[in-house]
Length: 276
Image 1 (cartoon, one colour):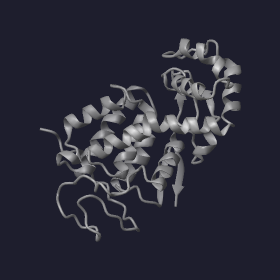
Image 2 (cartoon, rainbow, N blue to C red):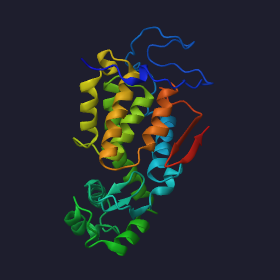
Image 3 (tube, rainbow, N blue to C red):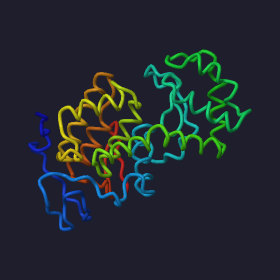
């Protein structure tokens, strides 16, 4: 039998939210209409609504770039010593995990002769490793130069949506999750990639083995709490900082903010952020 999740038993008081919002299975006055969460209304705005998507990018950027200014990160590039080579751009594309290679390949197909095209052979060689062989300062300079172009910025946006945002939101909606749940899936997809363990799909597989999703009739908060348990375990195994779960996403969840309504306050790596 799938467990209900510790959220039902935690002794942490929920923080009252000033603005009223409606979540599945809840009436306008905040009272529960059913003991189980229902799937979001098909017509309700999700994380893909423009203002929610903008908010999602800002929260992810707080963890990926220590800044809410996600649009200022197109030219970001450095090796953060995580075994994935160079990390770059608005979503942390990496030379070691294939997504940066695919980005440059797709961009070069539509914009041949760009500053990054000459590095494609080297990017293919280092794919799957932490190596900088054939890249180095020249590649870093080329990335920064190309990132000043609107076309490459659009390419980064498009690849982020194609690989991470759109699939995460689609699966979350299928699982009956509201805006917060959709964001939780998206952030996990960004950090862990869309693969099996230790990727997003492996984390989700372990979560659904222990708890029913809202689409299966389960409680939304309890399911998300278990999903975050599974993700946190993966992060600990990889020796990663877990504050983007502990002092951000769990805070939203324990506050009952399933619609990810503003104002929002959270911490990542000990730094405080607020969106009003």
